[in-house]
Length: 583
Image 1 (cartoon, one colour):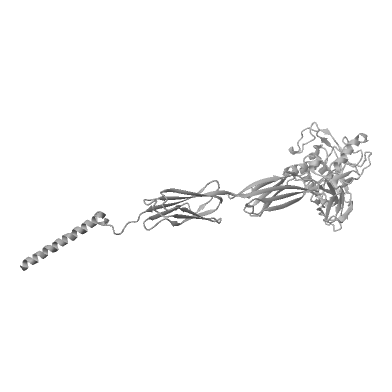
Image 2 (spheres, rainbow, N blue to C red):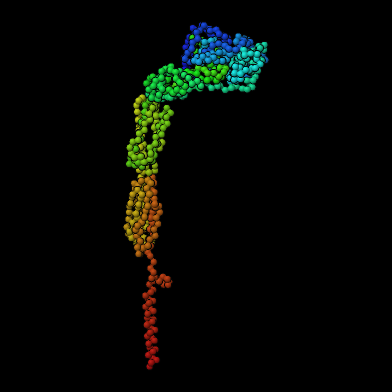
């Protein structure tokens, strides 16, 4: 449960007044016997219950360990008051009664602070175990859970007075190192309680009273209602009314802040409330709610600090679950606001060819926000506005992803970052990206070789690129063996070019063998793409050659003449022989 903010200032006031006070309670006995010390009790806005008297109980005798003695209750209950203990006989040990300030219900309490006094009329507010500064409260909570008045234990005790006294003495053993004398009639019951509880172990701190404002804290712009804050109690009473108040602001029943709720109004359970500050500059608004809620056994109650002249009072612990008037609170922190406007400007000859861009906004109020601009966004401005930033917030804009690539370069400028938010103003940050196409080159080399190099005709290469470039490269006829290189510049990186040879320089008298290396070629940054086309030229072979006979090619004519003359001689000789026979 949220603690009342009234506690600290009230107690500070009490410290200032204590010099004039007529009573010092810390030296008085802890018995809860009625007897005001001369100060008039006063109930304040933080008061949950008021001590009203005593219930079952009786006097006890025993002793208490000196402060700082080092006595350890976990060692078990001593057989008698240990040596060195200070004698302390209590006129009353038992149930203390208190009343809820709204319902008037009577509550059963026990003392957990034997060295400090309480008396009827003193106010108390709910607190935590840590705030009570009382040791071993977990063991005390187990006593309350398993013994009188929650149960009839110790059953062997003669009556409720003895049961209440035995329980209170067992509580004091854990809270104040108090030990009953061996002759005290309730000692056997107290010793048995202590032994059982030590064996079972402590209980955890119970939940606080179930009257809550949810959320307990929030923050927002000073010009916008903050909420809803829902006020809830776990009581089953359908007619429950919860009283709500504010300090520093105004309550409203609607999110628009048009239906005010008067301070001190009683509202039904589960009411939703919105808050606005009274000051335009903002500040903290505190809302309190008081209503009846279920309070589990084991909750502690601390002096509310409202009675003039009373600096401290006995700490009490609730013996049984009860419906108790309870105070809870919540806060709303309001601040003046301004806006941050982030503009992304895209420009340059390659605007629209870039990839996705991401800006990141980081503010010292915890805001972390990404702004994404899609790939291929055309030239122009894209603006994003971040509203409701607290005045004084410092925001830095960076660009983790700038849209550049191997084919698109970027130059980035940032103006206005870091930016400090001012009241009711728009603070500008502009990030400009200038995109340019990354250019490179293609080198085409024509290599001429072979036995007929120089006898070839004209050669034509054709370069075709996917950026639309179409270019012919001509090598003149009879170009001798060697390389001819052509470089094509200012090609966008990523361009793919194919080199073909529509005219290869071959003829009836010159043959060609062509090889192409590196085509298609992709243009890359910082490197020239190279395509090489090699033509090997040769003279073709003659099908009429006598090379197959093994004779020289210039031997044919003499051979023909010789054969002819030989035949003619044979014919003449034959004719002579025929004439001779005829004679």
